[in-house]
Length: 114
Image (tube, rainbow, N blue to C red; front, side, top):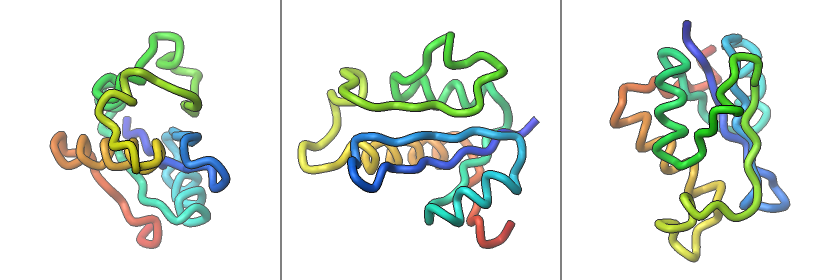
């Protein structure tokens, strides 16, 4: 079961963002096209949870099967420790997710090709 995720930054506050997650590639592609971002295609929930753990964003309550989106805002000590001071949190997390994708075989999909 593949899971698809995009990361959408708040235009007004680049330290706030959402990471919608769905099994419906068509829906996620629509969100990605509207927000100008790429789609991360995880093999399964375990791979997605592994990504969250590398970012110190994983929490058992957020990993329930009925949760479709992960919302983050405000300070997070696990994320803040390595973030360059000049970089927005949204850009930093996107870079970290992209690095995880590259290192762990997560598909990065251009929504224009869906």
